[in-house]
Length: 135
Image 1: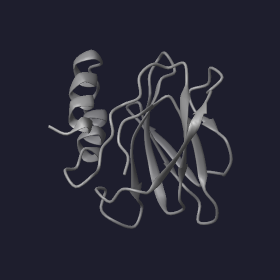
Image 2: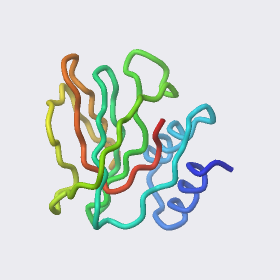
Image 3: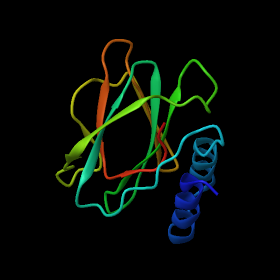
Image 4: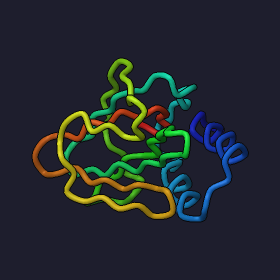
């Protein structure tokens, strides 16, 4: 079992989620992805840089914990993951998601899972309290 699978299994037991969230989590735990264990706690956050042409798939809980489930290439199959640059801790200041810089061209929420598409020019910076999947 990969660290990502373990994190998702542990998270599933603690937080049952609707079908759309299960689908996103299952899609983001593709065996070809490289996974890292979830960050613990919500006091600090990790800033992530997402390249143009990729879509961030996030889930925000009631306690403002943000989970970056995965990042998808908008032109490729969902199992194609983005290179994400991780930066030292930052704070979300009580807000579920902080857009440090950049703009989003589209965003939608389906059953608590947020989908944000990065514009063609520039990067999208997010502060997330919990990174589930990354490559």
